[in-house]
Image (cartoon, rainbow, N blue to C red):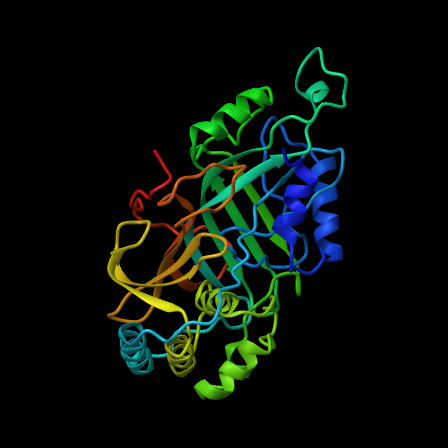
Length: 362
């Protein structure tokens, strides 16, 4: 049986090594107060990349909670005409929209969303989980999907706030629940538990879209060269699809730039049209996706055809994904719904009506 270190080495194959701030985040997570709950480590001092399944890290001999990576390295494929046609039409819609208001001095770009990410615990030993252990027996790794209410405020100077509230954790398979029990049934994130962080200038990434070209060919060159400020990643069409989602989420884009992004997506080999679908919050939209056959996952982007806004995302298992997790095809292993976006004068939570229920809760 593959041990945890070999498993994570396989997951990390082809990815760059951890950044210094990532190591600091892991160290802080290990040394901080967990108060009976597990939580994903997040690099301090910068806005994290919003992957549905963030890359894993490991510290030997210690308990560390990480997100399992999805290595989106799809092979060459033809451009699907139906997907290209829909995306070009969406680009025209985007270009016709009025410009979004931009935050001025003392203001913040605010986004409210609901997300669900896999949280994985590895490296625990039997001695840490209960009596009778010697401190050398590795306990089974286990994973759980944790939905969260998320709010983010970002000022043009990179200051702001991120607040997240945990929903009800959900095991994705009986095998994962059994592994959790075998590990001693450690504490899960408590429903309603909030994390609230404030950031000073330059600690969060404010996406300055005015510096990017609106010509699709020029924009694609920058994306493929991984030269979009603050957004990087390994090569491959699937990673390019991920970067397209990165540029559309939690950002206020000029209509011409949003249109150019959709036109770049229309030329991406391997992209497929899902057609009319509902996002994780139940709203009607149009879906496009990229499937990584080698990893057995499909990343979906769901947008509103009426105004081109990104409604949500999903990561779905479509084949063999990971033997250790034993997750069947069709399982949603990550999701996000973008529910509200506006400019605010402070980092106070705005008043609003009760939002709709999402998958992954209840």
